[in-house]
Length: 162
Image 1 (cartoon, helix red, strand yellow):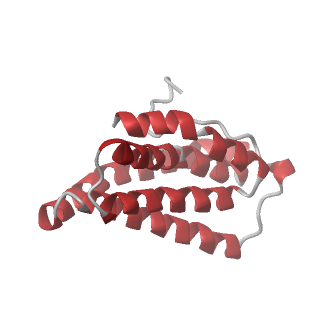
Image 2: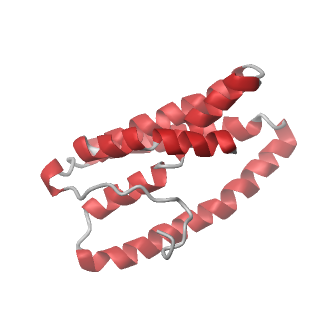
C-alpha cells in the first residue's frame, strides 16, 4: 500500500500536466494501459523486493489519478448548472464500483488464487483503455482553449477534505 501511495505522489503530475496540454481521452488511454501493464507484469513471475514495490508504485501512481482525470474530462463538456448533478452521478458510480469491485475480485481470488487480484486489475484497466479509445473515434476532442484545468483530487476523499 505504501508503494502505491508513494507512486501516486510521485507519478500523478505527469498525467495531470499532460491532460492540460493534450486530449484528456488520450492521456486517460495511455495512463490506464500503462497501469494495466504494470498490474499484468506483477502476475508474470513471482515479484519480490524492490521489483514488486516498483511495479506496485507504477500501478498506484497511474491508476489512482484516473478518477480525477475522468472528472476533468466530464466537466469539460458540462455547463456550470449541470456540474452538481453530474458530480452526484459520478460519485454514485464510483461508490458502486468501490463496493462491487472488491466483492467480485475477492470471489475470483478465492477461486483462482491471490494473483487474480492483479489479473483482474489488468483486465479492468485494459477495458477502460479500450473504452477511451472507442470514445476518441466517436466524438471530437474538446479544444484545449475550452478545457478547464485538471485539479488532482483523491478518488474517495470527502468534498470537505477536497
